Length: 147
View 1 (spheres, rainbow, N blue to C red):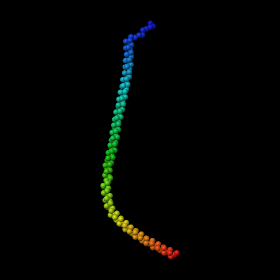
View 2: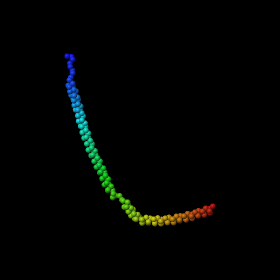
View 3: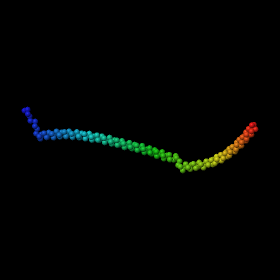
View 4: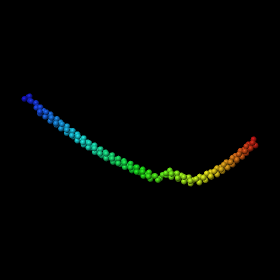
């Protein structure tokens, strides 16, 4: 029988087709489920990494804030401790007025001494002028006599 009947009933053919598609669908479903599982696993890893990064960022932010607070407190303490070291304007004016009051008699004495000294210098200047005039007159007389 060379001519064997290779015909398949339509019902068997359709069942075989659906069976083959069902197998392929199941393979695709299994592959899809595997990929979804991988994605879920990677998502969980990413979430853990994000949580760790968030926790580290919060710790770093706390450390930075603590550092800033410490530096601000140190600066506040320094300013507070230095407040008593500096003189206010009213205190400075008062001190200058007291010094001026103490120096006024000395200044008046020095001014009086300078006036006396200037008058003596004036007297000495007048003496030098008189001597110069006498010498000039003597020089003129001498030159008139000898010429």
